[in-house]
Length: 460
Image (cartoon, rainbow, N blue to C red; front, side, top):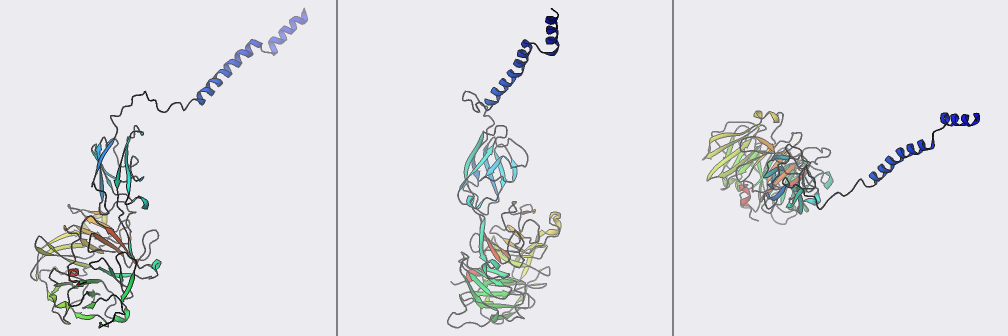
């Protein structure tokens, strides 16, 4: 009896009763089994066909502005539709153009305006997808096809990569968009419009070193020859030469340019539609008639009414609404004056960089005017951009806000004969990751430039 009681006490103190073990086992294993089942079926059914989804906020794209596509000169693209303003802010993680998130300018329910983005090369000139996503319902997005033209391409390559290893001092174009460039070594090259075939048409043997030490401007103009090219180099004379296709052309040719004496050193020149030459001197403007194309001693007359600004970088003679105007610039300003005979009247200031704090320290190196009188500015020492645009309100903004689209080291801009604006990286050294010196970039615009009147006198 004692032993039996002892066994019962020992069992009670040292062991757990079988029913207790079974109960504890159930408590442990049932949640494990439950959890295992839950994990196995957790993904479940992502889309339930019977579920009614609220689509009142779904964005819808109905079209674009410009409708035909974003040609190279188009700076902004407008996406039109409904329910597009679902998310305010300037982030772009919900709008995609060819797989790229663009910088957004403004957002409205009926449209979103974006700045032109840089696309992968294989996404230009073909239909691409533009999409707007509802951030609250990512599966509810709207897409449409759109066309974005390549902004441009390298047309003339005179860099070390091309074998020429030269820097450019002046650039001009003929009616067929052939490129004429003068190098720092006083070689004049002609490159076809495709940028493939390059020919030397003038070399340093034809140029007196003391007279053509720093060429600043070359421009076609009038004369009895087929292609009279005028050369200015900051000295008191202008060279005139009949441009040949090659140095070995048979027949009579000038061994060196004809030297036309000017009253003061010339840094810029241009022609009006009648072939009269305008030149920018050190502190004056001068005009000569069409005899500059044939005479060895044309007469240059002072233009009155000029403010006498020194160190002009460029001049442009443009006809607007039946009247003749001259645009001229130094490193900080651009002015516009009406030409009346041999006098300037109604002078207005178009650009004064001193009034733009955001451009402090920047210098104008070139400018251009389109057919509507809009100004394009080249600020070669800006840290992010080279090409700028003067807006209607007088503000100065980057032409493209995406700073990766265009080369940063452009120092001159020149309109071609058609809708082409050429960006020239002429005398700047190579900047890693940007753009080589000695290259010309063709930007195909959505407008014509104000015509270079001297090109109308090219006979062939």
